[in-house]
Length: 202
Image (cartoon, rainbow, N blue to C red; front, side, top):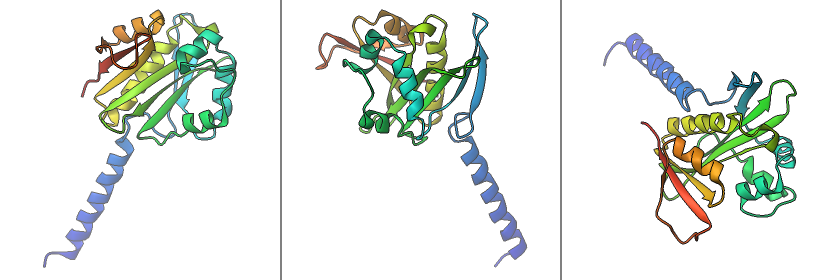
């Protein structure tokens, strides 16, 4: 029948290993994640996960995007984010949808956000998107956000991420290529869009 004491020890070890595995799930991008990065400009940016109560954070970012930047991100002319938009964008479950926000360390204002959403049909693929307010363009914040959201996706079993980019969005297209992207053949989305796929290291 075995030694009851040894069986209890084994059960305790299994529970401890399970807790350790849970702590590792998602790599460093889990509840409580915080990070500060110094930009080449000398400015400091901090990162954290977007939560379900962060509608105001997204509204502040959206308000500081130019009309062109809004269209490039949402593929529509928007003057504001609707309640439905905000519910969808804050529905981050830590597994199938995650968003990371960048904040100006000096002002504490949000300056950008990146997210991935897992493909329901192909669960090892995800679509990614990023937006950085116009006043903070060309500082490397978009790249930093995307590097982190891609790392978070990889730790959750995603093997490739896809960028859906407007054909005239040269900056986003160039960044996707720099991250290892390759262009997919044209599809039913039409000539106005490009899909670039970035494989993730296992």
